[in-house]
Length: 234
Image (cartoon, rainbow, N blue to C red):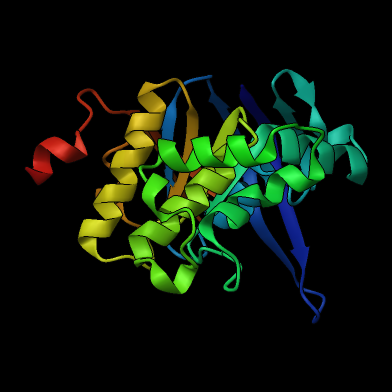
């Protein structure tokens, strides 16, 4: 599904000194994988997430998404692919405070040609076990519930890829494990998930861990026996 070929990203500082955020990163992610990308601050993982999510373009290299070279697309076509193929979950939930859970989940559908928006949003909230909270506003939900609303919003367009950037960073341990358990369930159902995190424990629940150091890929390890959140929480 994802193929990065020798990706590089250079930013220009105001002082004129270039910063190499990514250096010759090559990576393949198959459909149905659950991959965690880990690294300390400054390792390049946020830059890599922006490129995978079509929020930024690489300075060098090629990126294929579903077999299509997206580095050659213009901004409008990238936006269209982003809306149809990628669901985003962020550390800060980015929910609209004055709207209900249902209305927040409906937002991506307003820019699509989908019909039955309300029904699709209800099903997405049911998938994250929040069918009884559809009329609640964010202030009436716990942090973990707000993140699950954000996951439902990411899933409502039925994207090929779920891209999660530090999704447990603002949560307590129990809520974090509930969110990771949700990702595991979605992955078992066939969803492709890429999780960006600095937390090695959270990463250990994925099926594969890619480590970045100073903009380069330092390691790429498959987990031989995947940890199951709910078994450990019991």
